[in-house]
Length: 83
Figure 1 (cartoon, helix red, strand yellow):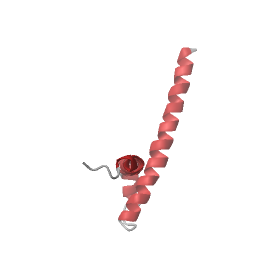
Figure 2 (cartoon, helix red, strand yellow):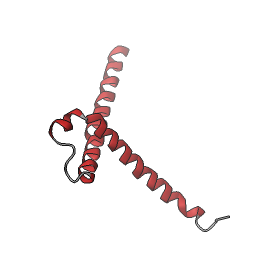
Figure 3 (cartoon, rainbow, N blue to C red):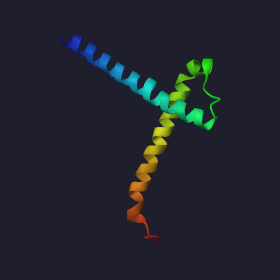
Figure 4 (tube, rainbow, N blue to C red):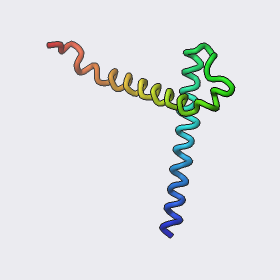
């Protein structure tokens, strides 16, 4: 029973990771790269070859957005308290 449960949990983790990495982060990275390069990258063979690079750009974009929100939300308590 435990081995079946472990297999099911591992399968669910794999599916969720695949959806997050290959769908969400890949598309965020692809949209950003298409905007920055004015539609030149990624296309065709590069699109399939550089999946991890494009997903890594998606991670960077999400991190930048998260950092911006965190800094903005914590900025007001310190505004005007320069020593």
